[in-house]
Image (cartoon, rainbow, N blue to C red; front, side, top):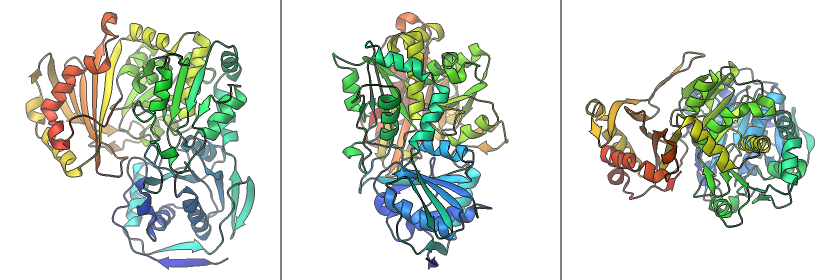
Length: 544
């Protein structure tokens, strides 16, 4: 085996987004495309020689081929050891577990998260740092700078290694260990949750559940935990075999793309509890019988009930939420006497807060919640958290959420996604709203008066770094909000997200349909932003 140097030229589209570099599979399959980005990662990392990396992905199309390329490049670039997931499978939260447990230098995760898979779908790659979390902007900017000047990359001439069995190999001078990542992940979950209590609930004959892995990465983990360790009946985990095209579905755990699960939970013979996770296992959707839990409410309920869960019974240092996430958790934090931090969208912004022990639980409205046990979102962790609460309280999901509203009030909340719209139109919409900043303040729209308008910026309380232009906020005098931002996770055109929030303390009005309760704000958003005109869409692609 020998190291060879390949001449190359930069690609002009390798700037990492919110969660790494995501493009269509066929883009990554271009000669040198993946290799350029991987070499740029290695070139940007100081002191990499001899260090340990973690590698794996969500099992989507091109996952195995990419792993073999990265292994050979890592060997050529002096990496000392790589821990790679069995069959190439490694959920994003499990990758964070492995990085932290093994004190690895970092990790390379191959995923496009909730984006579609298959040969005509998407692929993605991101680098995680030694705390197990996504690379901060200073790291991704350094990688991007390398992509713009790269002239060559190094790769080992070698055959592929067998990923289908737990084993060890030598690749040049580099040690390769193929490991079953389910085991360390399950052990960590056992340390945080009362498995005996949850198992008793699942086996008492009065409680049923359904976990939908959407043919994505969590299948092996979910089967080992729910049907294995916790004794749930066979078939509790559905769509549990990871497939390269996710079975032709869209691995996004929401009311549209997880419709089969929603249909089960809203049927006449619905189970008591339902959950779904996404492509790489870091997101979650929680459902009760005939009841959907909005992710913002889920974060608030979990925070309010954390003292009931083994790993969090001593209390929380603080909580954090992304700016578009509703303010429901803020009210809980106030009652608990802890800080609530508002950050930009992107899990990397929670990393400093968690490392500094300023926050214990974090969440995003985009179906992501987690805690300081790792530095990523964690879908199955959230499911276990809910099961632990249910086992302790002995109430239904709906009862728990509605009693929470009675105590704290309800933040009616919805996100309207306009996917794959023309980039030019999306940018024109944002510019149109920006041009109204001076005139909107104080303006009245029906029952609502604008208190202020801004483009959210964030100063990190730990390192003082400043992040700007994170989404337009139109905030009304009653603290209702309309938020408009372009997503950084799509690969085709632009994804426009419009967030709507209104607080309702009156218990008698808390059972309104969400879209009805937000109807006036939806109309105001259209009046201000001219959404239909600029997107050329009459309705959103997805309403959450």
